[in-house]
Image (cartoon, rainbow, N blue to C red; front, side, top):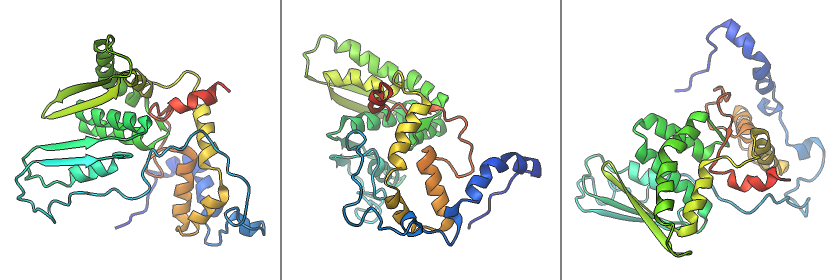
Length: 294
């Protein structure tokens, strides 16, 4: 059942009107909206040669482009009474959506062990996955853990409390490993196993990658919120005709929501305040350091 959002009172509505009217009166919200190539009477850029695509850095796939998949579907296949251990491999995993979907869907009655192996060729993906999974396993307040994980995963900015959680929970774990492997050979594989409650988490990296992992826990020098916003919107708001083409299949209000997310990059309900999200997401900003120096 869908319900309409409401203001708490008229004073609240009036205070928010300056921001609200931008979305409420957006052309995207009109049934008569037309893409730019129609209003300008030209061919869209995705037909013919069109302008060359501007490249921003290297190709990155921080997020999957299809819904999460439960690779087990245990209830439908082996059955909820299945009593053997599970061994799962997510090779070239990309983001952790399939991992989380598969584990979360295992029936609560299952009591055997589950061994999950995850890898990816892109260290950005490996680092982000490791950090997000460690957050869930180390933070006792599960609501805070999930909130932090989701925004590291999907939002361009995070809250200061999220950064503090990374500093308090994850950084000490990584720094401890770096100290212990200081005398190991360069280029050697080094693994660390943490026992966290009823869970065991093992991470294997090349020696040098353990130090690099710290970069994903801190905002690079020079990458301020305005710099990060400029770089982000240079990508997310580019190729306007391609964006408009995707909007053609959307309901008017959905177009406004999608435009908002492209503009601010914060994963929140549409009317939720983004005021607290002032810290560039450290797990996606290492690559932005070069832009900050330009």
